[in-house]
Length: 226
Image 1: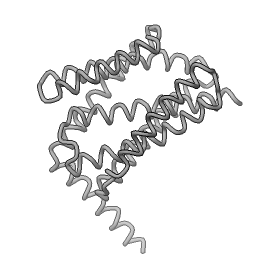
Image 2: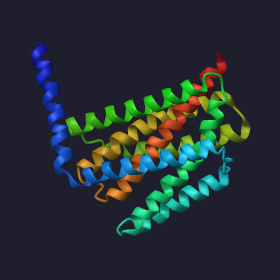
Image 3: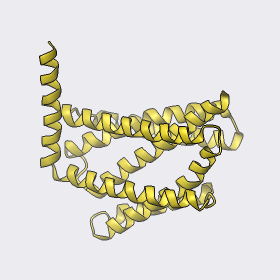
Image 4: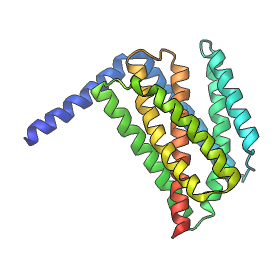
């Protein structure tokens, strides 16, 4: 039985590796995602070290959606690469104040490390599962869209009305939604629903960003309750 389990694991991992090696869009997406995450991490580190001020809600939303739509418009040209680095660099800058606020908490460094580790484990585990099983998660698209709209509106409500319990619930829901988005987008690439690696990169990057910030929020609120 142990040999059977080992053979199954070896087979699924080999299948995922084979798919990654032969699927051009998937391969290009992961290459660009790695570069954008590295660039975003460098910008976030500088923003944290320099204690740059938070851009505020309106500027954050305006910057994100403006650069997102610009990237979508340029996605089929070489300028799309420049735009995606502009978007991920901007989002990296917005992480600086969030990380500094967390570091100011008791055990803040531990919270940041746990959020980073949790994000990595969730992303790699879910991605490996989809690559190995090749399951189709396209049916989740409508549910995820509605869920993100509801979570966004609830998040605004928690921010303006200062409801800690609601903020905690929203963060937990966003973690689940972003896990679903990773499954959905990876499956979408594999099954040909997404053929543009720039837009696939943006989708996965945004999922990872929101997953990390939501885990920071959850762990930070948990630490404050102790």
